[in-house]
Amino acid sequence: MEKRPEISAEYFDEWYADMARPHNETAPHDGIAPHDEITQRHLGLPASLLSTSLLSWDGIADVVEALRLPAGGTLLDLACGRGGYGLEIAARTGARLIGVDYSAEAIRQATANPKASGTSARFEVGDLAATGLPSASVDGIVCVDAIGFATDQAAAYAELRRVLVSGGRVVLTCWEPLDRGDPRLSDGMRAVDTQQGLLDAGFIDVEVRDRPAWRASERGMWEEAAHLDPGEDPALQSFHDEAVHMLDRFDLVRRVMATGTAP
Image: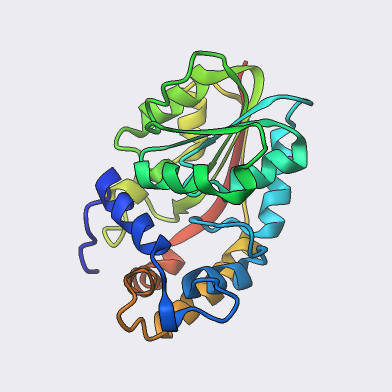
């Protein structure tokens, strides 16, 4: 496998900036960027939900059910990207939303998201292991497809526990290796173990469930992206390159949703 660029806040700042640039002749008549149109079509997402991860429309319903947010509670969308998932979950549950991401450009775009206007939502720069939030300040946490990006995954799980109130729920979606010793996977991917991470951080009622239906949607999306001609569009080029990489390791990982309760 080819070595991928270093994943950092600066990397994601550039990535998000590329996604926000006008696409001119590559954009369809409805104005939706091609990479967004492909993602939304395969994941069943509406055009208004700007996704930067791979949670499907049905997957959002699974997350909402698992969160068990109280009426008027506070939801932390950790690694929120452009804010689409957190805003959708908050709209369905009536929760107050706090979105945290280490990319300042992602936070800028999330704040400018039209769906954030007039809602009880705020977006802040922070890290998976250092959100900047007070202890026991949120009633639920969702972290979509990002826990594996933590430089120190144990510290990230500890941060989830620190900011969550007693009885609060955390829902993580991600990929886990089928074989943790497989050298074809990155060190970060081989280290992802949501069950052990949540248990070590003190969570109870920990459950990790496979989501094969989500996986099927992802395969179709990556196959289309891998065969497209990105032209001069940097966002499409990044999408195409990511698709080639993901298909190369597709059968080496499983798709999971992990949940836990703060005691």
